[in-house]
Length: 309
Image (cartoon, rainbow, N blue to C red; front, side, top):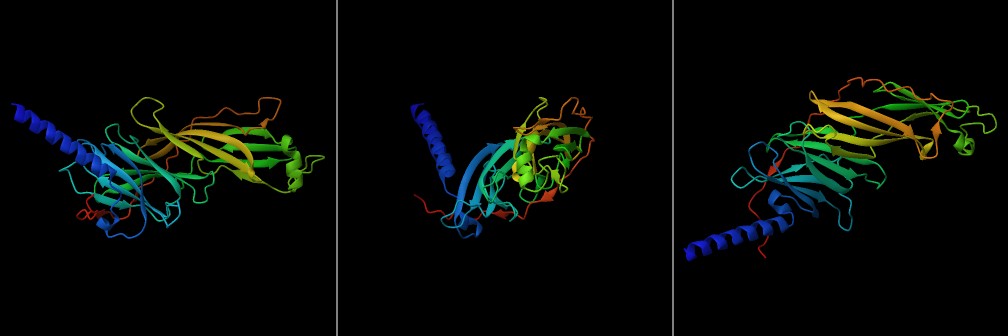
């Protein structure tokens, strides 16, 4: 009895040690026929496919020597033992930048998990890029969200005489007017307004850009994560923020739609008075934007070429 118990304890310890050793291993580029400098940015465990058990997902970045810039990113998929081969998914060359991070959330089905990827812009600016990747297997992985493609909600602004901005959120038909007079000297210096009488010297149009922040959150408690994001509308350059636009996106019918939009003047600005300056938001238009782009072909891992310690 003692010998059997000792064998079980010893076997359990060996398995635990082996798993810990594997998790601590650096990325083995040679096992995929790759050369260069590769960095392991993070590891997650989660059930990507119903009933297949926890899969290990490793985020890998290819970096030039002496740089923290990731010129390309990869996902290494390690299925539970006996449930498939280890393989590497290369992401598009355009997906690059600093400080990549991954999370696991259910966006399409409470029983499945997708990979949420965020990457800071290549120029370390405020602009971030966000992606959601659905893993169906070795030859069945795709993007279902790309912040550069899902351009919603859309807000447009027009400068008006008298230091006013007319802002319209197109996805909800919400109209508001923002008082720009606190920046009259800035606009006069840049040739946009006459500081004395508020006359518009040249036409100016402002648009909301991509999300500055985007985070998955289950706002309605249905087991499906929505995307809560913040956009900034700029006028005469990045030093002229006009409005903050917060929104919630939901995955429905194979695409993304706007659930809610809240827009407000940027810090230091206010709505035009007297009220009402804001037209109540109407029900979202129901516009759906679909992303279904396959990832580049995956590569199966060969034998482990990392030298034993």
